Length: 404
Image (cartoon, rainbow, N blue to C red; front, side, top):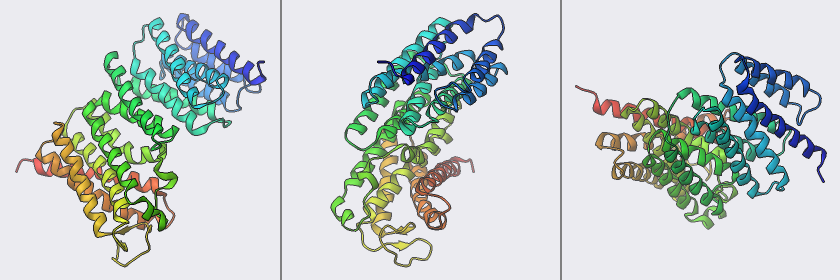
């Protein structure tokens, strides 16, 4: 039996289909945007969620102004409408995410070939972002609006970069990234939101840079997984083990991976070695910080980084000699991996080690100065540290390669 919500989802899907395939026939470019705004006004009191009309008005206005291509607007509507209807009727199970992905991507590619607007990367990024938001928000009242806006804005960003990506390369990136993310989910090192966040980062790294950059990021996750399991029973006994048994969500993925991923995007747009240095410095910081914390806690009483006084285990800003050694060794492993993969030369190797080691100590410093006082949370500390690691890595590389 079709419920009231089911009726609304079917109606939304039909409207999305009609709009997507009829709007290209419009005699004027601004009319489809106006139609979406009017549709939002009509749905103001009869809608799937109170926030949907707002999303329609925002997207419709961007389309009318010529900022948002018609394909992006239509694809965003198809992603959410087709994905949500399958998600609903499949019972909102883990398999529902796969059905959402397949259906949404199918309609995006059908629309792409129908309109002649060939931009496969735009579609893949839109669907992945929508699923990421769905995994985070669940069935909240704002889920539909944020999925719609998130998918549209992600596609708009990628579309504006105007990068021509071969479909074979895109398929290659999807298989590798989602394959790794799926196994991370199956082995309980990532939750559902972490799965899509990891896949998103992986696709960006492979498409904008190189699969070797993805392997370097993968090396970080492998090292982090082993460090988390290192002397886990002892860490449990002193109550400093990783939350949720080391299962990482989107917050952890982005706080550690966002800054290096931005460096990879910059490299894709403007291929310069300084962005390699920034990427490696950021990844080395994330890896060194994780291992320094997970291994260092087993090295006796920590000392506060600001005054070297002994503090209890688990104190933000606490460091140990074992943790410092683990951090330095981990940054060296990341740099060595980059060299073996042919991504880094000697100056980049040195920049990676320096960026990672300094960055992980800055993480401890930020934890003491900002996190302990409640200004930011752990995710904010990690993001600041990895960003600094990127900057330091780039700066060290410049200093080493600058002509005398």
